[in-house]
Length: 273
Image (cartoon, rainbow, N blue to C red; front, side, top):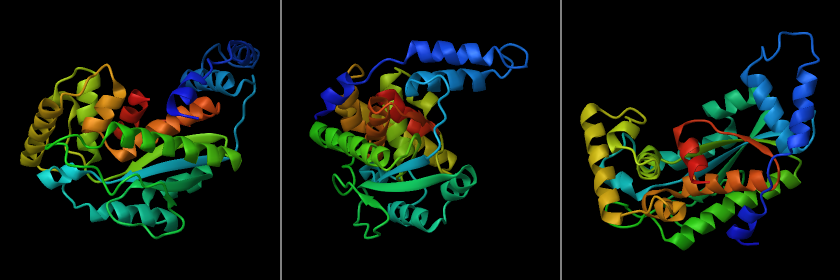
């Protein structure tokens, strides 16, 4: 199947299952709607799983890892070598995401969709599209075809995990420079000022933040991404890790699995999806 077929295969929520779930909440001994977002979330999950008492048990955090050529412009505090180090640390339960996931009973699955060097760790899934993106300050970060390939990689990983019995997903990412690419996508797609959607990331100085904003503005001006075409935006000023996450979201929607979104970068990927 191609990307368009997956998108067209996504079905709406099961309204009947949601209705039955809501009715059950109202039969329990508590004030009506007193659990707020928790009730709303469980009702939505009933619609996703098409069952009024959906209770997904096997959980996984999918972490997409890729490097960004724009790092060459001094928009980060650390170098690209950190992407591989942290990604491999996830296989040794030596990263914060592993500690938090172990408490909630979720497995962590790191995926190399574009790390700038080879990742020989067999516990890191190899879906590498290319060795990091190109520098978006000098042209598109990747081709449209490469963006689609990375999205399909995310869908493939999702399918494999569903086949392994995983029922509930969360997303994560690892890629030095990816707050720069995320801010660029966000600014374009939401028609927002770069200043409004750009922060210091992992510890930039005030001068570094000004440089980051300048690079994003210049990259958008050079590449002229079309805000009405998410693939155009993703390929021109995005990242492979973000593209992989787009695939996870589309895959979860297609395979009828709930997926939790955590953080700015994952949220931008959800916006693209």
